[in-house]
Image 1 (cartoon, helix red, strand yellow):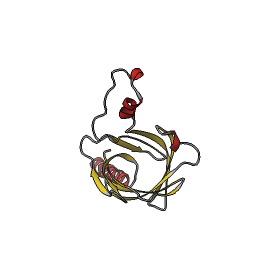
Image 2: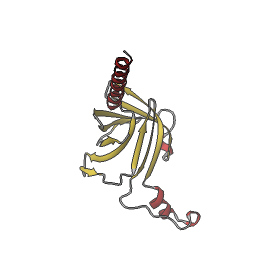
Image 3: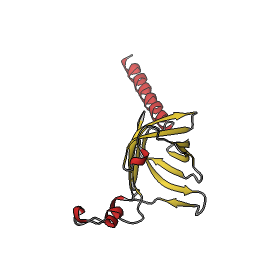
Image 4: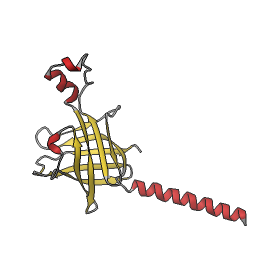
Length: 165
């Protein structure tokens, strides 16, 4: 009888683990990396992001955080930041993006993000938001810009991300 109980308990535990893994795959919660960006409008193109992927987005139950290095080549390291001129500082910090805030999912396929803190102060604070539509297939998600607090995007970008955790 004890062996039967142990087997049943093991099966239940494995089934529960499988359900938890499956529910995570059906959720946007996790750690993501962009692997491709598709631009529309003038100069439309698709940009593949190769290793190392210098970006990371973490999505929890109610919050998100993202950092990205959007430079096309390695950013320079100034010898002395206190003596760097404006062009040197822009080359170092200009292509870096950092942002964190809250989000909500509505309609099953729309994410509205509200930055609380950002490298760019123009996108943080009351009333600021960006809305994306999304499509989730397993550990791959496509998010497409829809609108921000100023209205719809004329040439929305679509970002393909993969779950890394």
